[in-house]
Image 1: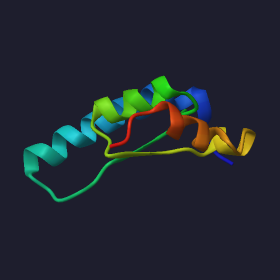
Image 2: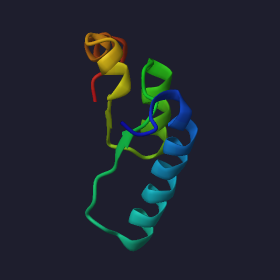
Image 3: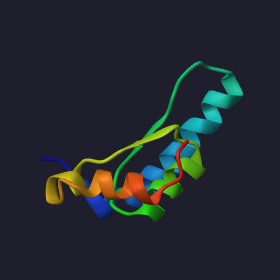
Length: 78
């Protein structure tokens, strides 16, 4: 195990924004997946707004296997 969950949430969102900026500037055909501290609807939205095209759940899914289904139902389809 490494460091994950809420401890890295803000750093993860900052990294998504930085990567998105670099990818856009260089016009690279790369997708960004937001991961790190995602367990609530607001966390998913923050990663997507920072430039992620999708979001991965890890620690939250280990603690609550149904969290992905709940979040899917709370978020608009993309």
